[in-house]
Amino acid sequence: MAVRGEPRAGGEPSPSVTEIVRGEPRAGGEPSPSVTEIVRGEPRAGGEPSPSMIDNAPADLAELEQRLGHRFADRDVLIRALTHASYANEHPPLASQEGLALVGDAALGLVVAEYFFAGDPGAPVGVLTPRRAELVSGANLARWALTLDLGARLRLGRGEDLTGGRTRESILATTLEAVLGAIYLEGGVPALRRVIALLAAWQ
View 1 (spheres, rainbow, N blue to C red):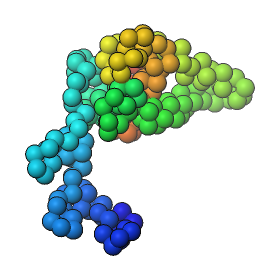
View 2: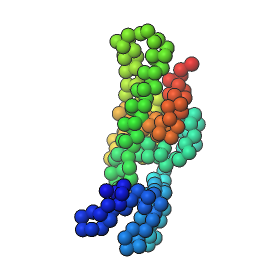
View 3: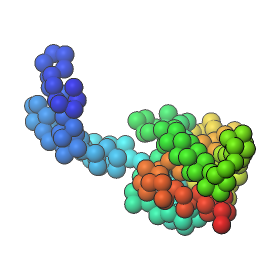
View 4: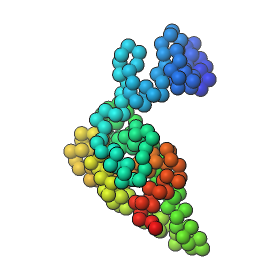
């Protein structure tokens, strides 16, 4: 219903995608929030600020981009990739890294499988699969995350921070996947290939 702006229960029309994206007025004259307002935390009607993904942003994002060999057109996407669920839970309605990590996990698997297949196209699956599994393992991803110093750049909830979350393997691996997911969504497979080749030291 939200796509077409069809009526909801009670007869009030749902905002259409056009209204949401462009911030066009809804019934009663109140403007719908635009995508820019939602993502960047620009003030809404009445002066109330929307939650910003820039609040308490990790420092040295430019250095991280340099280490990755990828410059983000929209750093808000990178900041989301560095936002752990524990931090998002403490700062609703911020979005966490989890969705990006899902995308990154799948995209990473594709690029790694492609690399091993191209290097040995005649190899049986029983040989290629363990190679891929080793490279995409949590332990290896955590090592890559350490080389990027992702732990220091993470936005963590207080509890996770106090209990060593910045050095926990599972959190580091998930964060690396989220960063890779952000790169894939912004630059596609070619950008992701370049970053993974750098991290894996592929020739």
